[in-house]
Length: 206
Image 1 (tube, rainbow, N blue to C red):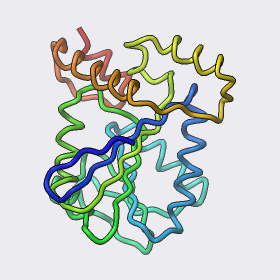
Image 2: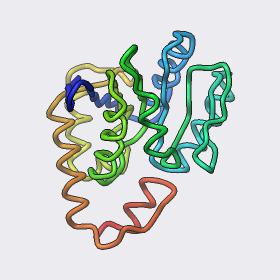
Image 3: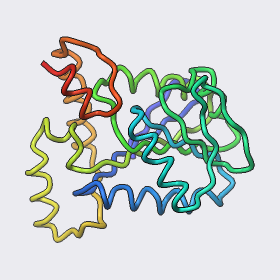
Image 4: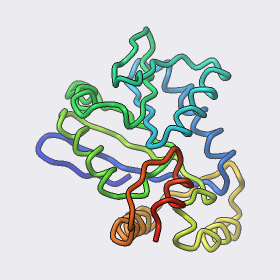
């Protein structure tokens, strides 16, 4: 994990990378099950609509209770500590989750192609104060990893004897992701909206 922060807020970021999407979502679901009964506030945040819809179905099938952020950006409240949200969530709502009394767990099943979009998201969380832990659940078949030799990373994981269920996390991977995001932002000719990362790259990447 890598700490960042402004003032009294402490932001911790971690990239957890699996070889394939199936293992990524399986482990994300396992972690959500564990956190759902912890009483701790958990924000499951998606940058794209397709991911949001998919995870909503997964949570319902696995019978993990969650609150939903409506299309108007309003939280549909319930008795659970888990909230599924997307870019519809407003800045002030993000700030309200981060309180000094307990760390906020933020789980993200994807990166946004643009670093500035994530930076705005992190700043909104930091503005609330308290400790924020952001964990990205990723896989090498994500469109983002196709920008910088995902095959080499997979070969390295296999040489280390890692199984499909195991993940890798390292500061070099986090740095490579940020570098790819910034390069994409610099070279993007368009900024069209999209329902998935794959669609975003198809529409906007030069």
